[in-house]
Image (cartoon, rainbow, N blue to C red; front, side, top):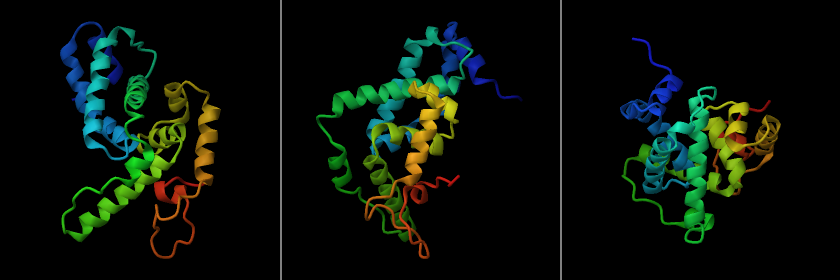
Length: 199
């Protein structure tokens, strides 16, 4: 059976078939959760709440959906706004530095899980060191697999601006101790840490 197009499903939601939103939730809740997890420095509770808020907003603003736009782009625009609202509310409470220095979560004794947790912690720490807009560009391009023009539409800027931010990211060096490359690698750069390919 052929998978129905996201835009078609969202049109049905827009036109009053609210139950169809469950299909879009199933398709996108995990990628949205991962998007927020990276933006919040690994805060699972906040990330779950933010995913819920995105779908609440989709329901609230469903009539604004225009089928000429790609659903994923519209979704991440909403997600970005939800995250910005969250930052406005919580910024005085928790700074990036506090998030970086907070106590690590209890881990199991299994060596592989400890190493994986360490890598995820290092990734989250490195992400929190980036300016907000560059962090968003990195997450949307590298982890959410969106194209420059889609990211530009989400962020309300020109594709050239997104490309410049990606080039700037490739030039950044990871702060000391954040990324420990495998043996044999000499340079510590963010493109090593995040798998950004040099052009």
